[in-house]
Image (cartoon, rainbow, N blue to C red; front, side, top):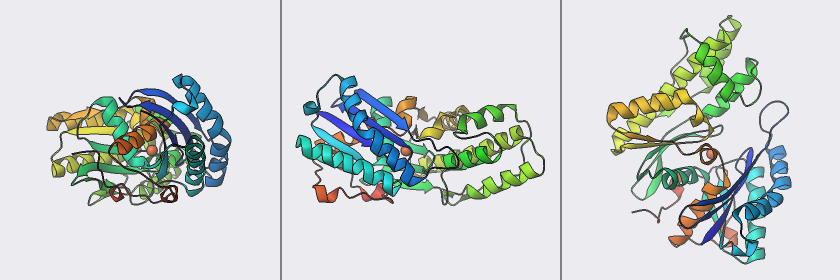
Length: 327
Ligand code: FE2
């Protein structure tokens, strides 16, 4: 069985093709990059509308198959930006109907976890999912993927992007912040914002900007922001692991490319006798292959959707999905 998945929850439009063994046959990605400021949902959706059809054709070509060889069409049903979700859902419906194949809507956060499991062979991990729009700690418990901790305001990646813009590092600031942080030496006085199992990042962003006004260096601000925010992520992940008694951590989302974050989580895992798994970069980021693979395992477990059930859900929670494909 071959599944094609279309991802489009935020700035990335992705089309991936996988087979029944989880082998990625194609994984095309195109990112909408705003000229100034953050993501404008309508502009991102227009980007996806322009690129999605050529990307489907490119993915099919890369996979060395024909359109008619696709057995299932999956798409990211949420959570995400409404206009983007609706655009890729429309593309997926059109493709499924024209090929007369089943269609399946996939929860984007669950897809990060499932592609990580098949690619790294982690069995039952706690997922630390850290990206622009999402920051969640997710684990399987009692038949569902449950969120054990999450951001109460903005995603960690969004916070780092905004920080980068405001202190003059430009757009897509994550790697630049990581580089600058290596030169930082002084741990500044920033709030540590873990509330129960949840986290908040916007206050830390404000505090960073105040530090900049006070004349602190970009390097020290980046260093401190990373140390504080990543310690928060690591703490919540560790407490989730202890609570659900799991000994694996899977990383997912764009921010987990950061080597300092990996180092902190790896240290925590080593202290607990646990194991950390990091999927390949292209499978950590938002991508179509993870949607295709999750749709495929859902389909094989008997999940079916009528077209009228493929309405997108901007606030799609992971625990809304009954997980029938795991014991
Ligand atoms: Fe994501």
